[in-house]
Image: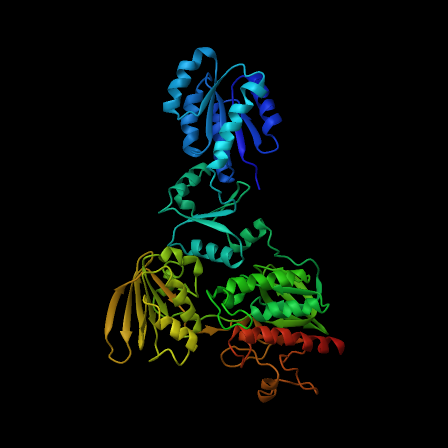
Length: 549
């Protein structure tokens, strides 16, 4: 934690050195003592402190300075740090100016030169002011700040990336937060640079890619060694479970995740049917616990990082990453999960992140306070999202293509939705058109039975219409079904995709030593517990495969 600052300003070098020395002797353990030889230099220092999110406790400023007097400085400084205490250092002849400054600059105290001995004439006064400052202190957020606009796809991407990677941040909307404009001025930026990410060290990044942020904040994006016993591609529940069991059983394990650990399950606002959590837990909580557990056993987690190719060399499986680097192992587990299926409507892509969102998008929930939110889908993910958004939105409208929720949603969720006053379910209803300019403004709905069309104002449309595997990069190597899901175990024999004399292991692909678990696997049960179970037992098959090399 950065120490709060006491700032003293005086154009006389000898006086400045003396007052800084006395301040350091008494307050040095609690606060950082900073000094400036002019008001302008001091203001520039304050701008940097704002960007670093460091508080100022007290200003101790000489009145008689050229260009900018002490009172002039305090008037400007108090706009930047309004809670800081203000003390003017004056000669006897300046007492009238000091008294006037009590009203003009909201002065807290004025001190006459000389202040010797400080134990009598300086410290008791400043101790009292510091105690008052502490008594009214409101804890400031000290982490990353993101400045942007709600209707920016890049802003949404950055917020989603930080939230899903469990990185605390503060969101400042340039259209709503006056502080955002001030921070841009201090950073010598303007609204054309948005979104901007401000870091606690005072630096910033303009429209950064996720990898740039990850590198800056210390997420591991590169492997520590070239060879591992086990490479896991994908960090959803299945991949995390495999990582925990693999590393705990002595396998040198690395996991590659292109977005954030937790996968699609990590975006879930509430999982209530996972064994051992009777009151439920969020997908983010589950991911955080699993990541902590995996790292405790020594798993390396590379994020954001992406596998682009796998090639074979004898008994080695070599994984190429997006940056061109390569990792080698004997065993590979494919646990990439699935991605949300896109709503196929003309022009909808330009609203993605600007009113149209795929997944729970918990980062957008607070922004929807008091609004009507539309949710497309009728399975558990849509139901969990509806319950979550009902806490913020004035109305949640579920748009379901089927004639009821019972065909695809768990009964406990149906009962919760029915008991929530501000959730409505419109069955046999589809979105057929989206409208807007820079952001979503309207949606057109159609009833599949009557054909009736109606156009409604809409700012937020959240889509949960199933998922698809992204496995095209495995073409020519890994056998898949017609939808792209990976074939494993008995399914390989039925598809005549297995050529060895021995039978394939239950979760093994057509390439010996490469396995698949979780939602990306053909025939898997799309539940968190199922993914965790497959990831756990798959490690046994990896061990059996390695023992025969």
